[in-house]
Length: 246
Image 1 (cartoon, helix red, strand yellow):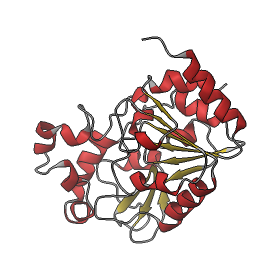
Image 2 (cartoon, helix red, strand yellow):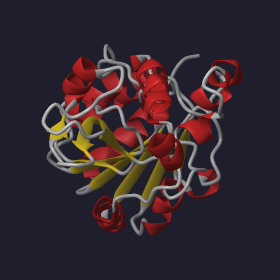
Image 3 (cartoon, helix red, strand yellow):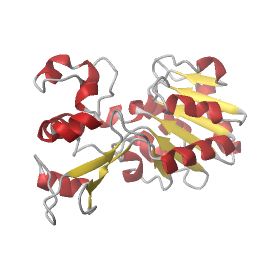
Image 4 (cartoon, rainbow, N blue to C red):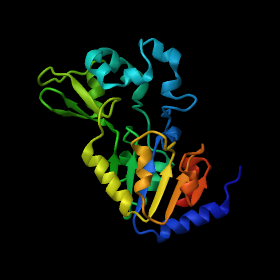
């Protein structure tokens, strides 16, 4: 399938003319880096046979309760299924970083690839695998520390359990991150949603705060907000974005 030249040119023009852009990104932008999405055909929540060996569904395993009461099992799943230590930013992550002077990234992803790809202003509304803290003495650990402390990370300082600062099921999002995301989106003049199904709240509700002129959706499947967008693009995410952003 040949990319439509007019789509590329139109989006280029919107990006060039915009003064404040927000990129709202989901799992689709990290798939080319080898990270599976949650709800796709090969996604984590669909791998039931895999999840059975942990004695619970994806939603149960990645929940606050499971972490608290089955910490060792949680970590077994976490390190085997959710950590991709060799994942590198792809061309799409790097392309977004080329707009650091006028763009903010709001992401649902916990992989930290936007920051690794060079984006300066990233709001990680679901947290990040790169941020971990001891529940007892609050010492901070990054992903490298966690991999050294695997398979069951305990704090070398006090022996406490370390918890990843990722938002699990039945946990609230960080209020500061969420209000900052709302604020950035409400003052943006261009919102570009990339690789997100726009069905999982609260991320799905964020585009409703957008008051600007153009909302663009770049996703392989239809989303509930397609009818509100001024452009809907079904191209291969990584190569399309790389072509659009010089």
